[in-house]
Length: 316
Ligand SMILES: Cc1cc2nc3c(=O)[nH]c(=O)nc-3n(C[C@H](O)[C@H](O)[C@H](O)COP(=O)(O)OP(=O)(O)OC[C@H]3O[C@@H](n4cnc5c(N)ncnc54)[C@H](O)[C@@H]3O)c2cc1C
Figure 1 (cartoon, rainbow, N blue to C red):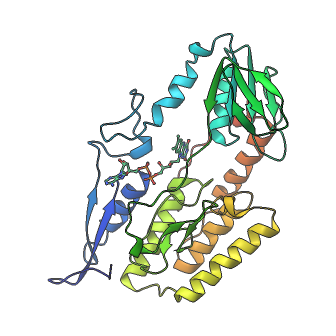
Figure 2: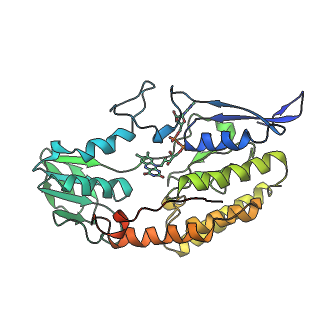
Figure 3: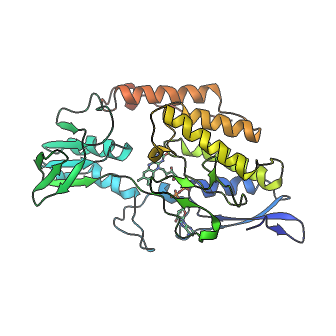
């Protein structure tokens, strides 16, 4: 995995795997620098767009992988949960969205999650259990501590794990037992073989503008305009990132999550390193406001989180 150059015209040859948001963003920028790059995009499905390519199908796609996008639609028309007592497990964005959707038809939703604080202003028929499931029984679940809850249905919104087992071990990318991707600099670049970058490792981000910055940084490193630090320095940077998160009370399990100010700080760091434009003040404010509105009132249709329509005219 050395830097690949097109012998004839000395352009850097790039292989983009996947034509989702990240791959399309890479293709868009690479195509603007024809004199520097020659590239191919490989997409295993017959459509571009990845997760954003909505389909009504459910279950598994032609490649045997679970279809994510339609799940939300099926939760939105959640008649199958009508008058039921439903347990939703997992306190991420999916868990909270699904709890709210299902609560509109269910008798009661038990929203079980491990967050340190309960969510506020949820519909009255959502009961929160800040606990873990010990076991699933024939009629419901047993929580840690022994409480048994009778349930009609259980929805697992427990997220996903990174799995890079398709990469040869020699690529030096490893997911440790806490779910942290090891061997990666800036949640993006392979430390050992910096001609490889992996997108969508940083979570709880605003994907499209972030991918824009990540692609520009990576392209600069490929052309040599940006000289990356040594492996030791990259590893030191990662350790500092971990220490900062530890001081914020975040465990290694959350290493790639850009909570609180971490998203804007991370994007600023990319902008500084790559010498590209940081997010504009209006975008920063929008990001901040939405977080406040979301925490204040996720549900009310006339509340600012649901009511305000923001038209972003430029991110540059
Ligand atoms: C259930 C769910 C809900 C989400 N909701 C939101 C949301 O509301 N807002 C938001 O901003 N983000 C959301 N995200 C995050 C989402 O992952 C990003 O918005 C964005 O789509 C990620 O872009 P990507 O290109 O990295 O991945 P994807 O969009 O998943 O695209 C990956 C592409 O690569 C292709 N591919 C995979 N393996 C190969 C291979 N070996 N060879 C060739 N092609 C391959 C796939 O077919 C796919 O087209 C959600 C994610 C999930 C799973």
